[in-house]
Image 1 (tube, rainbow, N blue to C red):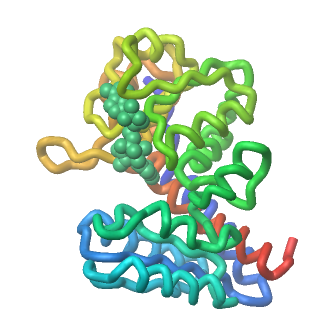
Image 2 (cartoon, rainbow, N blue to C red):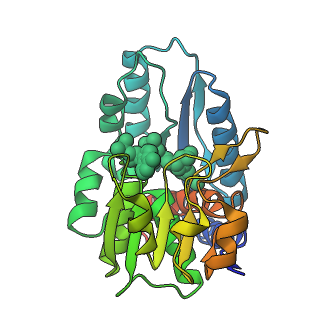
Length: 281
Ligand code: NAP
């Protein structure tokens, strides 16, 4: 039976560290989360981030904007936040309503306040070296692996999914830590064969039941990034947990695995941005 990679426990520890360091800064860090419209899932995520800010002593400087907010209004709001010295991090909750261009909005955020690491300049920094922050979800996965003494060096890592926010940066981080990385996507013809090569398998697709036990090598480390709803409306991942956990050496649960780590790393990214803005070590 696999050992559970307990993201909830590690996230709590990280948030405690952030709170202690935030309290020691000359000025409290500030995060502005912008939510446009009333997407129910987004509202849940934003409430979670606000709660995390309270726990970590980070000022919550965000706001909720009506669904009919124009792109110009949103860009003007971001410009004000860029100029505000109390704001260390700006996060625009995605997805945005259809009339607003996501790329334009993400490019408008001051890269030094881009705590999601979505701005093209930070994506470039990520390619060539060490950006101020890494994207929260894949970096959270790396921290979770490290906590359990799992290192990608010399191991075959297979990533399912190639999105800009999860799959691609995940592959880059595994590569940076000397893993041999294969990235699979919807056009990969032999997914099972690819998965069976994995010492470390990371699934970030968004399809319940995609990864079954026959696709997993005995003793592999399995990380399930996905947050799906099953037929009963219950939160679940891509991995068939009941059967895969019999074969894997380590596995993340859903919920309680990668999700809490994403939130904790966001808080740490805000702290890192605040330290950089305040020129603190
Ligand atoms: P996304 O943008 O929809 O990307 C999904 C990726 O999966 C795409 O690259 C797609 O390939 C690939 N894919 C689709 N069907 C496939 C198949 N049958 N076999 C192999 N690959 C397939 O999603 P995302 O934003 O990366 O999120 C992925 C999942 O992670 C979702 O469940 C999301 O809710 C979850 N998530 C969780 C967290 C967290 O904190 N735990 C954070 C972010 C996202 P193509 O590129 O070819 O279309």
